[in-house]
Image (tube, rainbow, N blue to C red; front, side, top):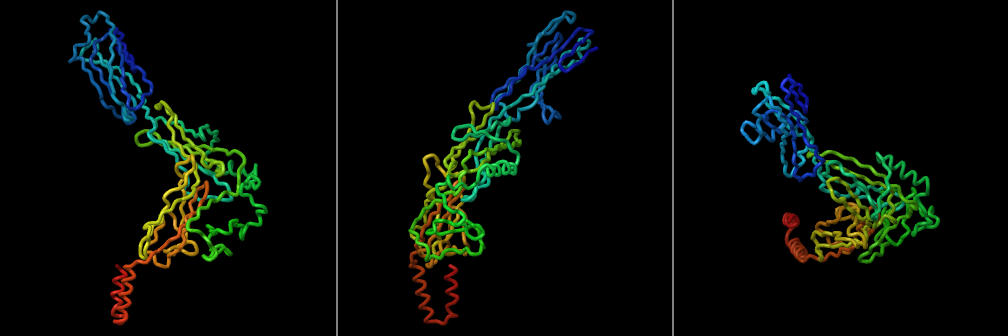
Length: 464
């Protein structure tokens, strides 16, 4: 009789045996060429070798290689069954440029003839799991909950999100500030960040510190308007509140504003946090359809525009499939000096005018404004052409401008959590000769014909 195990078969009567082992492999990187080696020892006659790839959690197998000894004479055959001969064999399977779908278990099945009868085949097998690693394919850093307004009088939480996709196993993600590793504290929810960060900072030190602020104001309580709304100190410039419907707050009339053709202004915070911020770290990971991972790492702290402006934050990734860390960098930057363009440059009555923010005056460390700023357009002294109080976006579109808009002033407020800036431009509208000529012709016809006879013609021209 024969005793059968996974790797060993021993025939006690005829003293035959078969052992099968597969050489272990370390994790391999996607794209490498891998060789699987199956070693087996026996004193019997070889019948066949079959390699399988196990799929779908072991429910199915795919045959990837077969060797049939009946049609191959390269192997030694024993002539005398009574003479014990110990033979060692090795079967190799080469997998070129392995991909993620090659990850998983493989099996090597070996069959030898039973000494009692060549009609019977004794089988043994060995297995190995191929672990294919995939390096991350992309990394990016974004600001959460943006675009957002600039807060002049209170601190606000700010979160950087580092998104890493394509790694297997999941990579290790960490943050640096100006090249130095950031010491972080773990958290599990936004609520915990607010409780442990904002409240603890307020308990340790007053949020508003007038002695440390370059724009300090003596007797600050006296500068609070109705309902404790802060009042701008620069009275010579127009005031705008984001609170609508508050009694006692009115838009300044055009006669109270004396604004040059282009004005650029900066707003600075009235508060300063003197202590070093506490950084809170959290990360989540999810499996993608191809078996790789996507990791989102979040860094949250109290933003201080006076200290964090032009600070360099780096998200770095370590992974066993990478020879050096992968990284993405962002420089926090407040918007400064927006540059406006007006098209067409010589607008005429009836034209559609586009006023667009073309760029900014950048500092020595930043090459773009980050996070993405919020653009708000208003008209000084009145509503916009469509009747709205403000419009959002990088471009303000004025369709079919009338002559009444000649000389009107438009304000663009650009802001992100690090700062706010205003710039103004005046719209000059020239007469349109074509419209003027048509108006003269219509006036002449009105003198020669009754009103009801030319009303249809007027409507046709206006529709065109």
